Image (cartoon, rainbow, N blue to C red; front, side, top):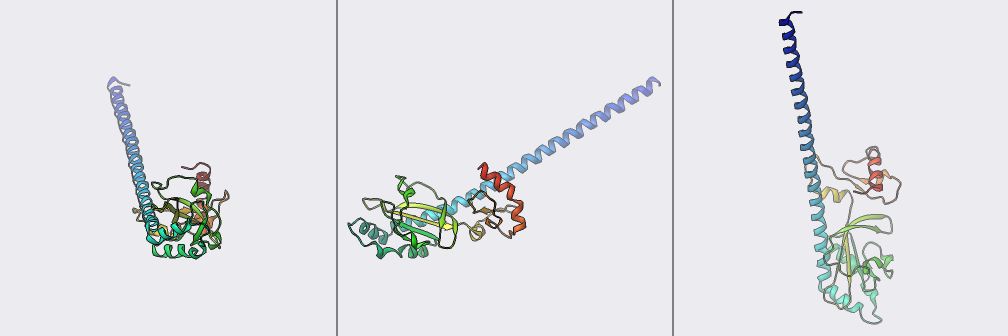
Length: 235
């Protein structure tokens, strides 16, 4: 092989190697850039969902505060502090408050945790909500998820707690909205994002408890591994 031929081969090999390196670099950096853009988009979508979720929570807080600050609630709270007060006359008040303020769940709870009125479950009247009295100040607590027991089902709600501000002893208002398909439909989400709610609190996966737009049993089953993973390792 002549020197000229060898030189030509070296040049060709060098060019090929250079092109390969450039092609690899372009592919690598293009993929990295795409992954970075995709990650940013995902973060933006999640941030938008959290914003919508927080806004719904703030709406619930406002409605619960309106109930707590209402004149009728003040009269009920003052009457509840009287010895031997007949609190049975207030057992339907939570229903009216729920309807007036667009809430699915409302309970009026005395200073000792005794439920005076319950919109979602009248049989709870007279029982105690000990968890609500365990916290000394609810004024800055945002809306949170809560398990709701009704006569026909166990539901999941986004709820808030506020206290009537003008009575010596705490008088609690617990109010919330049901988390279901209607709640999901009310969220304004970006194009390409889908929100799902899993309402079952037991370890076993129940397809019917995974709620979302156009969600059927077959689709729900595909999410079983993800749901079970999140149950074991909450994010």
